[in-house]
Amino acid sequence: MRQSIRRTIARSTRASTLVFAAALTIAIGSPATMAQPAGIAAKARPKVQVTITAPGTVRQDRLSGVQVVFTGVDARTKVRVNWGDGSPAKVATGTCGTKGALTYPNACAVTLSPTGYQPGQYTITATAGSARASKAVTVTARPQPWAPPPGWVQPAGWSLIASTATYAPCQTIPWFFNRAGESGDRATMVQDITAGLAFLAPETGLTFVPTNDPKAALLTFSWADLTSRGTSVAGVGGPSGDGTATVTFSSNHWWTKDEWAGRGTVRVDDPNRPGWYYTAPGRQSLVIHEVMHALGFGHVSDITSMMYPQGNDNSNAGILNPTDREGLRTMYLNNPCPAAA
Image (cartoon, rainbow, N blue to C red; front, side, top):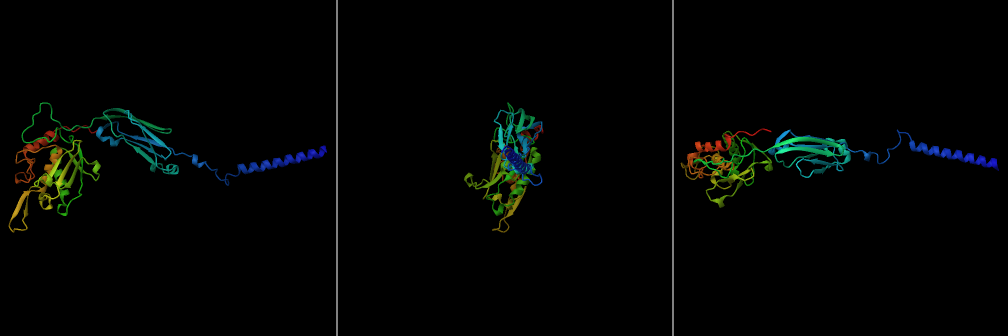
């Protein structure tokens, strides 16, 4: 009995050993043939990179040059920017999946920019997990438009429509023309706008550039029915009080028709009476007059001035008189350009 029992135990032990060995072989397997366990790939996380783009010194009105860019950001990753001005940190997440952020990190980027700074010194800090970057920035004040100094007396011959000029010296003015409501017989107005601005640029030191983005425009042109302001009104213009301005042309006044295009005195024949014709300053005079309102100039009583209210009088057919130029020099051209930072 004892020998029989020992043999049985020995055989059972060997059997157990063989079973264990077989199970172990299945577990470790061959790397070439074993399937990857579920969950391994899901643990891989994108490596976020952060870059702060900003000059050492930047003006308040040029903050578009300040950006924080995070790359390789998926929807599970939070990025954070502290602008250093005491405002709450800006927190955002990506929109890519994890696989997309791993494979195409540059396409899975989050870009953040400040909405505003007061003049001063700030340290921008950006973090995303273990990724971290910081940069010091000095913000200088935006250029200020010309304003009358203490004790200043308004000269005769030109006038202010508001308390200051609309724009700062040497400023670049993006302009937009909303052509909604434009009739076919006024389709070349954009050419007179472009030419009128080109005429005023050297007289003011301003740079006028067209833009297709109405939100970026600092000067906006448009059409409207202005008969409620009077049948003689061909256009209106003026500052909006926030560093922007508007000019609106009458959609039904005779002076805004294409037949009056150009600058100088224009002659238009009367189609109903052979030999009869009309003369008036070219439509570009209207553009210049209204843009000068937008720049901050008011009406004057001198019939030779561009700012005489009845601008379709032949005496000022697209010509700036000496007091017009005096006003343009005082409010714009003779003032120093601000620092370029």
